[in-house]
Image (cartoon, rainbow, N blue to C red):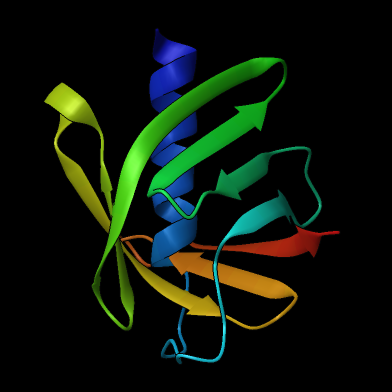
Length: 107
């Protein structure tokens, strides 16, 4: 359970690390691998995000609060809002504490 919570929180942290505004020309959908890490985050078009790391997987619902913020609903743990920046191949999430996480798109 703790590992699943950590994975969901990691996804939220990633979303917060973004520093650029989202534009209609990019999409967050798809798989992203953490830079210098093994964590893989997958955003689906149906509003689900799945985080996989060290053999553990956790899923949650996501929405965009606005063009610069990703909101991840973590059930009884509440919601996490992350600053998000995305280009074709790079996803940056910044959590409320200012911790930045960068991902590269997996093709």
